[in-house]
Amino acid sequence: MTVPVRAESDRDWFTRVVEEHSTAIVKYFARRGPHQDAEDLAAEVFLTAWRRRDDVPRGAELPWLYRTAGFVLANARRKHIDLPVETIPDEGRVRADEHPELAALLDEELRGALASVAERDREILLLNAWEGLSGDEIAEVLGISRSGADAALSRARSRLRAAWGERQTF
Image (cartoon, rainbow, N blue to C red; front, side, top):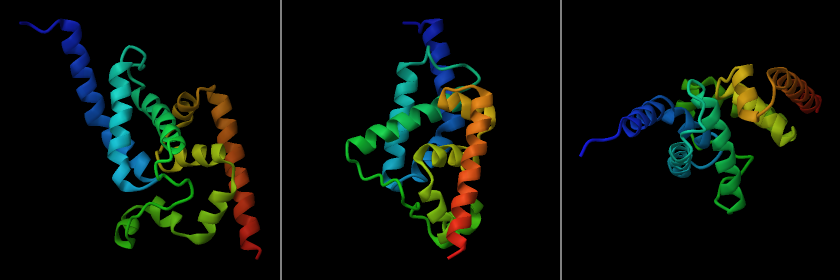
């Protein structure tokens, strides 16, 4: 039996997407909760991508995957899976030294300031700083315009600076 061209093309596309983006999606979850859940939640994102493959924009798969990851994370939290919002990934100091973004999060003042901003601001900041997303990609993840994403990132940065400044005056 021969595989239809469409099915083979879909399979090739999906294989490429998983190979290119699985590490980023697993890290997304690992940075936001316990490592033991990261791969399972990432698998759920890729299962959704396969099921909705006709809806995933070709060439812009990563922002779509991050947006889906945000929904999966929210659903996991609603189901009471142990994914606390305010925890630091359980990485050791040696590992954090290899990753400046983790080392920065081990800074207690910065952690406190980041925890004090609104959840949406925190997510925008982390998409930019941790995930390295551009303004266009953040806009895609959030489902808003590029100018809206730029404005949201600017406001989030201002709020973080203000929160950090307040913490350093003590």
